[in-house]
Image 1 (spheres, rainbow, N blue to C red):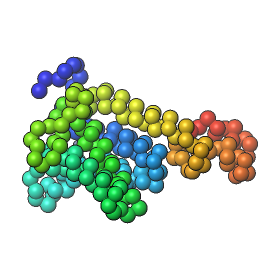
Image 2 (cartoon, rainbow, N blue to C red):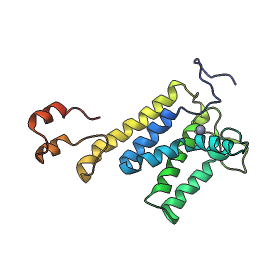
Image 3 (tube, protein in one colour):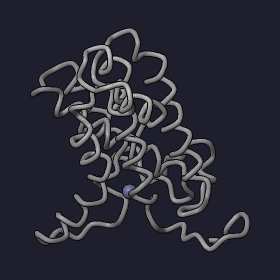
Image 4 (spheres, rainbow, N blue to C red):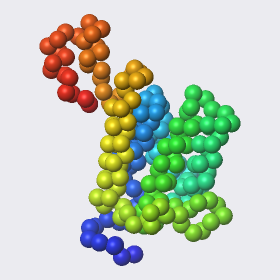
Length: 188
Ligand SMILES: [Zn+2]
C-alpha cells in the first residue's frame, strides 16, 4: 500500500481513538449529555470487542466482525424502534456506527456485513490513518456540535456540558458579580 501523499501514517491501523471519542462525545453531548459515557464506550467498542473476543479464544481479523456497518446500524435501529433501556443501546450503537463510519474514511475501509468481502468506503476512503485528515474531521464535528450547542442553549435551558451558564447562575444569585466577570468568557 502506497500512501497517497507524504506522512508516515499506517493505513492498517484504526483511526485514533482520541478522534473516535471526540466525535461520539461531542455529538452525544449535544443530543443527551448523560449518554456521553455510553456513546464513548460504543465509539471504541469495535476495537476493544476485538481484544475481548481474542481473549476468550476467537481468532478474528482486524476490522471484520466487530466492524460490520450493518450490525451497528441494526443495533441503533433496534434501540430506537424496538426496545431500549434509557437510550443505552441506541447511544452505544450510535457510537459504534460513528466508529465504523470513521474507519470507512480510511484506506482500509470496513465491511458492510458478513456476506461482503468487499470493503466499504466513504468519500473514496482517502484518509490516511493517523494523518492530519482525521483530526480535521474530528475537529470539524466537535466545532459543529459546539455551534449547535451555542445555537440551541438559549431555547431549552437544559444543562449544556460545553457551557456553564454563568449569566444565568449570576441571576439566580448563585455566584457574585466578580465571579461572573471572571468566568463569562470561560466556556470549557
Ligand atoms: Zn476500528
